[in-house]
Image 1 (cartoon, rainbow, N blue to C red):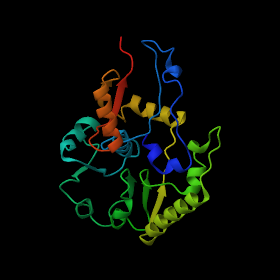
Image 2: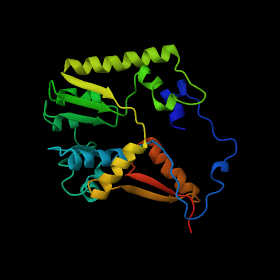
Image 3: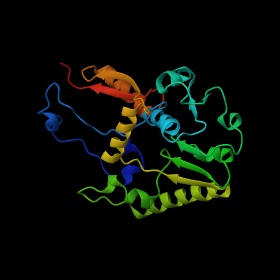
Image 4: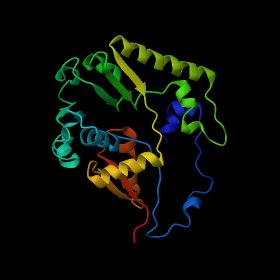
Length: 244
């Protein structure tokens, strides 16, 4: 539903299945089911994994994250003590004032505000990777979401606009000596296997925010609304489809 309201609706028309439940009619208690739902929220699955990978896998010298007031004390509890070196409550502090200018080497932008932090980046070597802005038109057309049997094509005007916006961001970042790029999220088996190895070694701790029984309609609606809004969530949301 959320994807249908964004830039993807220009190229891909999502439809609900004709016979709801038909594709899972053979599932029974105890079966393992895998589904990809690429939506994220704050101290989200994305942010939680990013902080842990930065510190425990890439050995980052200092990891900084922003959270709301209610989550400040939960960060070390959920991600492990010492994983995040500086926790900023964005509801009380201005991130651009708290972090010294020219002191950040890398930013993973999960909110779409990357251009506001250019002055915080280390000149010449700073890198910003965003998963919350928009891809270029060329990048979107070549992405996995467009490789479908119906062969969707991005309209030329939409492709042109997206290319222009992406080029503008890159040019703006370049003026500060910073490299900017958009990362298209493309879930795949190889990356999942790598994450599994990190988890087995204890470098990455899975963070589950809430578990909801699929029969609890109000609970499902509330959980989906939280994920859709991108605020108030904590880690991953797990829906229990069948219970013994």
